Length: 469
RNA sequence: GGCGUGUUGCCCAAGUGGUCUAAGGGGACGGUCUGCAAAACCGUUAUUCGUCGGUUCAAAUCCGACACACGCCUCCA
Image (cartoon, rainbow, N blue to C red):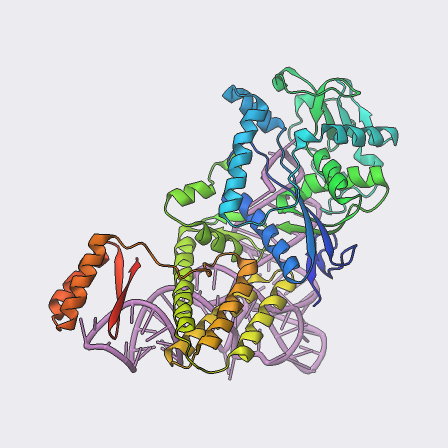
């Protein structure tokens, strides 16, 4: 099946063809580890996860790199403020990041290179740029990239530098740049950096932000690779600068497909670290939401659309997931029953086919989810009319396994049963007895009581089930 | 000032020239089932896609203008 992605560089959908047959080399911009990543960050990482899983679903092997930016203005500033060495300070957030990724069921990338572990590679790359005449040294021994030397500068973001505002403020430490948009490849040490510095041919200092991605992508993926992703805010200047550095140094195309994830907004407002209106994954978990619920909300809108995150949406995700779980429990019961039923493979194959082709079309998750919900409804219909046999139930469960290889939100492997506290169980038994003797007044009273305790009773002909509200 | 994006039912959200009297989810309402509920299922809920104009045999989909919202041009995914 053809896969197509919207390529930011060309601003249109393009058929995806990897450089090497069936192998996809992909670079995904990772976190700056100076704080807990927020759900806006995770929207981007989940987009990348869906991308990765979709490629794998369609038979590709993915080699993914995600960088960890563990040295920059903010990590230095905050570690000094906290009085903790940089390495130790960032480790806390690196660990937290992996914990959160794990909770959200994000597949592991092949490489998570840290910037501080690749200073040598960056220095080598900067040297190349200096030798080739793309970079210059300022009075304070910083090295800047001269965008006027790279005539394609602005091609990704479609920015014509001659037309830009020259910026209301220019940092005092950038006074000696040739042009305002020139960016640092190497920053000479100053006292604000404390004891954070590395030796270089230009004296002690530290790398600029953009250079790590050029150096590390080259090391792990080669000079030209297939896909580069990130949040849309990374498009300019970060990705533009990466292109300038990489293509100037290597004299060849940097990336074949650029994919950018739109913002997540919260209750209609832009969310960013600097505005402080952010939720972290751990915030939401401590409010009682599950990682699956969070994942469901964050993947449920197509990546190129703004996603408006609300608590309502989170609550709705709980309801949706619950109805799937109910179906899985019912299917598992039918499988155990070994009974005969109607053939289902035609209808299941249709929905599975639609699911795969929807995602192959620039990750159209909405259309893919429509298939998932359609199969949910069709399955419930078959169960309600008692037409579903154990063979059919197995086929349906297999289809949901197939969906979940990309969605990663279902709990399919075991029948999911809630822990029922003894006192709740006792009340429910009492109610069941009352109901059997047709003492409906008592039965209804206990049901109400249970509901207030957070449990819903569902009656069946000669049984009942308990579910958490 | 430059560049760019969006506007689809009560809410979320697909669809980007004919199969659209517009997928899917949520909500609301009515029904089936049930002692009553819950769950599940069925039905109803946009002849219409921000506004106006144009192109076309044909437009939510293309073009233009306008309105509103938002983003980037400041090391925020």
